[in-house]
Image (tube, rainbow, N blue to C red):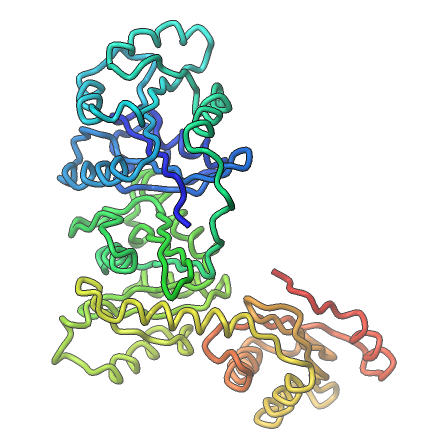
Length: 454
């Protein structure tokens, strides 16, 4: 079900991103005093008083982009306006009408029936007196708000409700969220556009084009998915300025809220320090990962898929279990199959294993290699139970957790991962001490929680 669309349009520095965040009730778009921060269409599904709509923040109209992306930014504004049911034309109540305000008014000419003129930054009631000047733009009386402080937002929402009407039902929840992560210029935005089937985000060879994390909904096999395009990550010592810093923070947040991470790699470049750090970050948060090797068409003659897979195992050992997909996003090749691979990982991560089969697997692991320790008090692992999914979370009860060193714990994790029905999803092992008496073991089993720990 498609939602009514509310597009926020205006010149740079009028507070469009703050308004999107106010409508969504959470931080979605980067807010920064520097003009031209937002480039793509940044959207959020909003609910107000039982009414659902999609709000879209757009780049500043007429911005002089330092990376020569002005035409791309204005093309994205055009897409948003063409699709919008309601257009919020944002101006700054503290300024007089500017030449760029007039340019926006000309751009929106003929769409008066869909436009609501909004005068932002009316932080105090005294600011509202200046709003009358904006009648000259030809879109009626301006509604005064302060997006940053919440003044007038409720009245504006009431106007939106009146215009878009009530949705018969909330939008369907996505069956899976995918975060596309990687360093700069590996083709993340091209990949997202291939999934969306439209130029949803700007594609450019300029490093750092994407700044926000952008949620894009798409349909496949009558199911709704969300793919999150994220900013390209650079080495920490090369990150400069607040915009790039917050872009990296949003990329990390995208990983945390995703069900599956797609770590995109450039087939023509060596694995970098950034790739390794991103891989480690996904594992710190127990996220299933698909290694997406993009630009595979350019790697012909250099290496075969099997050789490249061996190379990834050596250079990204933490993701040795992760499936590998080879894509050419610019041609849409193998892009949809990545979604199928991710769906399989999502299913694995949600699998629950009964206690019997789980302990049979544990016995096999102990048979392969017993825990090393002193003869006086050898470490023992008594039994295991699964207490959660996504990630699969297993508690192992032992007599002395401190004696089980990191390398042996990793061995157990690797072996269980191979023996249990989630071989490509990371598992979380929790080590607990208990008494070796049968009575204590029975009590421990009775009190061990079986619900998800997520």
